[in-house]
Image (tube, one colour):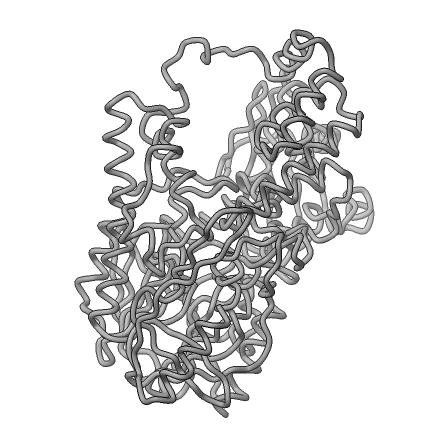
Amino acid sequence: MKKTTIALSLLLTAGLTSVAVASDNHRYDGVEVTIPTLSHDYYLGKDSGATHYWHGENQGMLWIATGGNDAFDAESSQVHPQLTAHSQKMDKGVFAYKEKFFQVYGYGLTSPMIVDGDKGLLIFDPVESVDKMKMVMDDFRKVTGNKKTVAAVMYSHWHPDHYAGVRGIEGAEEALIIAHDTFMTNVVKGSMGGTGPALGFRVDYSLGTLLNVEQGGRINGGLGPDFEIREHSLIAPNTLVEGKFGQLNMEISGVEIEFKHVPSEASDEITAYFPEFNLLFGSEVIQGESFPNLHTIRGTQYRDPSIWFPGIDTLREYKAETLMVSHGRPVVGAKHVDNTLTAYRDAIQYTYDQSIKAINNGSTQEDLIREIKLPKHLENHPWLGDFYGSIRHAAKQIFVGEMGWFDGDPTTLNATYSVEASQRYVEMVGGKQKMMSHAIDACDTGDYQWCAEMATHAIRVDLNDMQPRLLKAKALRELGYRETNNNWRNWYLTSAQELDGSIDYSKKINLQAPDLMAEFEPSQLVNALRFSLNAERSADQHFTIAFNFSDSKEVHALEVRRSVAQFREDFNGDAKATINLTKPVFLGLLVGKIDFAEAVKAGYITLDGDAATVPAFFALLDKPAENPKITLR
């Protein structure tokens, strides 16, 4: 990397503005590694004594460095060279295009775009934490001298790295907040109203939030230097793009914008096009300088590639001169924008089509991860590296999304439970120490995958035995050090900490933060309680309990009926008990800030009907596991 940077600097000094540089070769773990750092034209911007690259041409773009890099960007034997090179792209700074569009880059997983309107700022995709967004705004104002208030904020979709820092924008509460009409439904489902608890602890593993930034820990976030939510906020949208493939044309502070629904990485994704400047904000339809996460190992519903790549064709129709996206650096020049969009959509269609072709020939999930590989011209494209999404886990998920989990071998319909199978394997090879001997031999010969698999069988015989746990942790770390993909690396290394007991849960992400839940409707809060119902304890119960919110004049209920809690919106029937309270009091109960009995005693809660039913109802609800084990099982 250093040799390439020096060469580029010399070329620029000689008067060249657009250069194509051959890939660097390194040796890593005994294997020749190619780093296609600049396989396409890149412009080397120089401003304020700093240098930086963006894709394309020098047409009105400036780079202003603000200092620092939150990623780990030093070379190390514990970091794949391609991953080091990826980190070295993530210096903090501001891309300024025609003194109108500004992308504040390197402050978190997302790089917000700020547009200078006539009377106010338009901000697209606040970064994931309030403190980070404050830094974004402070440095933007220092660099530009712009003191205008905010006129509008757009959330491209419901993932927290695109909205959670919104209260770091002074005055955002008074601004237009623009999103798709399904945004809030998706936020609720991804927090307390669905799989939020599971997503929370799985995000910690995939994005490495429990790891330190160091050579043996988190390197970068794949799409940005890191992902850490230290303060989670939300302001509910007040301006909506409605319907599937809906469009909303607006003029905001003298700026014409076409907002368009383009389902892709998220079902509620919206983009923004600025016709006067022929500039496209592609949101996360183009996910960033990495192969897209057609599936995320942290967990998600099926992201249908057959919907995603036609969405990119919709963006191609703009024939934009400039492209900015939620993650990654700008692309300047119509031919470069078209090249990036075309390569990205082709990579997605290729992965989908070839996976379907292989499935039709009998391939299963474990076949696809080995069979489906990008053609070289896409594999080496600078926006398709294996840093965040990966064709390896994408192809497996296409099988599940299209065919379901069953691989066709009937012995897997009701396979021997994994713990029992491990016990049998251990017995079959002659006991736990014999199994450990096989595992140790595998590690000693560098076969770390097989080592981890053998150690797993020994662990399941006795979860408290540290010898196999430490061996598996060692194997997982070695696998992680060889990875370019951040999600895979982070999961390997966090699981290793879980196994050896060094994991620090104090840094975990809270996707049920009070400021977030405060934006939910009372109906959404009540409905979410059904996911906490204990099926066994409620097996013989049948009653309805109502919640009367005096501040919003709403009544919603849950009918507990033999292990099921049916939500009843705008309830006007007979309840066995009614709880009268306000939304803030209900929120206090949900987050554990208010004691129910004390609130009743103080008069913040009153009860109608059979008062004894109320504590009986709450006794039927379970809290999600605090720190569930993911690897040690």
